[in-house]
Image (cartoon, rainbow, N blue to C red; front, side, top):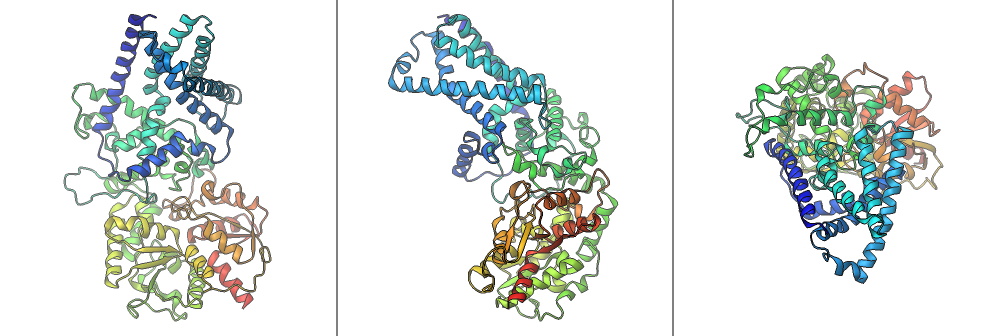
Length: 636
């Protein structure tokens, strides 16, 4: 062959790639520290399942996902042959013994099958880009050329095997490989390299927890993220890994209702800004220490320069974007980090949100109702407080909605009646209960959240609380996943799982319900903080089945369920841009044809009920506890 030519091509190709890769690496090393890692074998399992196995691409049966999987697996199949080809360019006999063996023949046949699938997959992708012009995709010449280059790689490999213009095919093939390698770090196809480590480094349990701020660290000059260098290295890796596929934006409820938020575009804007500031690292060839090489004075603030404030405030923190992302990019943490800086450092937050935050600070609930009336909803139910009975097995943490919102109070009362019927030993805190701080944290006021969390934890300690039940998924997620950050470790149950267990154990009897559909049809709306945040999908549905309902599912259900619009602090703010998310969600539910909707969250109950009222619809919206309590009364 041509060893000198191949070595020169290989040397220049690898040198160019290493130069660019070094620049990308210095950016990662200069970023702030990220969370500690653990569970290496579990992480490896995730890599095999989601990165190599491409599980998310098959999850919802999209043809584009199948095509992507074929392309990825084809690349893996061709990788060994590509190494052999470089070796043969230096020594003609390299790998020949393997290729002549039975294993080699099997590999060749296996590779050829996947090469055909790669050509088919790339052709389908080009058709979607050039002809269909699929809306969620970032349509670019770069992506088109990459797909054409991949097809050329497959065809030149075939040409070599068939000895058709071998030398031309050989040098075209290896040159394309090296060009492709050097092209990767400059665009979205960098994910070919970074997606595996990003999947490995994904957030494990608890997935529903935001990272805490060290508010007592006197060395911190700022809280939250004001400039690009204040994101941590895992967040930088997220930016590197975006495939620009648009699945995140396609699922975003804010984007679907014409709000100025596209998770994909937000990531692209942050990534391009990061790359644009990489020159700060080229002043020295020493790897910089955390965040010191990016000169703060030369960096613009992100808000108003790179990201519009209305973009980060449009987010409902529903995690639909993260559920959809095939490479496990985390969006919510970045958005909340930028909110934190606006709120804690600049005091910039909407008047409505500011009112809710002040109410939480003064009366420990977003409505600002006097905390002395927090237990009034239960006065005639013979419910004891923990101050009256410290021996109660469970604390029923009612939450602000269940204590003060007139509609949610009915859910609290229904749930208490079910607990009493099942002879569950429980108590409430009454006036001693405070807001968990969920909305405060997601609105960016980490200081207020931590104050409330520590006060509640101290109260739990006072009464020796070990087990907690709550009817609010937001309280549930915060108590279960975020209070442990401050030493509050408890056995936390959402009422959907708790009620189902009472039914299965026979403590709640529904003997009169002979079969499903006796009570009619119903559509269940998945709460984001119960479903995507905590993977509780089946329990509410099982309760409805036990109550005799035939469940009609909307297209947008379970992990692709649409948000009601109340998360991320939006329960306390008015939507002034686009259409209301709760009305969009109501359309999903109405498409099932059911005349009754079920929820398992007080926020969702309010939002769906409001949408029904505002659109003059006739459907009834009930919490699962109300449905179960009513069904038990009617059959007793």
